[in-house]
Image (cartoon, rainbow, N blue to C red; front, side, top):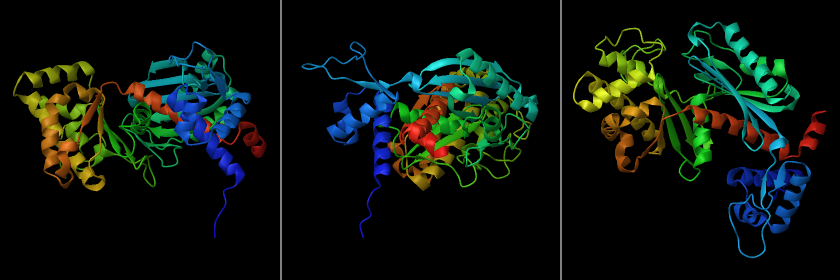
Length: 411
């Protein structure tokens, strides 16, 4: 039996394809949209006219296009910045930031403050986030009713439904349902995401050819985090955000980790672990809560200068990372790896031991095809990933089916 496609479903799918193509390509012409989407000229013309009339897209004025074409000029299409407002909040170790974006993905305004997360209570954290959002909306001249989506990134484990921060090394507090709390306070939809997952979302948007089907992002900082994309989809666990690469066991019963367990990869490769080893302290010594960038720069310089405790610490870190990646590749096959964060400052010292360890695992059979890209600053990527997640939710859940139709259906 042949199953037909409902007209409404087809319309929604086609509109979503057009919006996604404009978001991805910037300012494509209608002809370019035909090529990108595979839809007919007449379908593209009808959909783009509807989206312009609804205030979702806008025709790009003459002179805004950077591409000069011969013959009859083509009208390009862009996202209408005033169509929607979304927010992002990023909660990391001792740092809280929030940003307002317009529908075109441009920053309207942002705030950032130091927050002593290690000493903050549950009420302190919730209060700081709420207060910052309130102040940010005033800065932007917006009200909660103007906001269509908020994406919050946290350093730690979130639940698989993207509603709560389950555990994090940045505070002793756990199981904070930020989405429920903020939705009750402000009235707009909220999701709570793992920070490394948002890095993966941002990298895929930046370079969809390289970061397309399978790829790995590794955050090397005081902690070790991972974002994983498999078959084009961001990986999350059945119960949590998953991807806790740093807490895979490297040596059972080994070095003390910040999570309280022993032998985790992070307990050998996190900044605190490298500093602990380089200083000659016991690997059972209590991990430092934070290690400043200047210390890591100094240790990286010492490692490059020659053999010694610093070089040995970085080599040991590389070994832990390499065995972890090799085990991962034994399951998913080798994939591109983006190394993100302060750990990139000494990656040249660690890379040989990473590759040597990978080569000793089943996942190292194709070691020659494993490549590493370096991104020293993780914050812009986390921010981009959050914004992308929020804007794509608006694209697919509101504007693809038609915002007016969606509002009527929910009435």
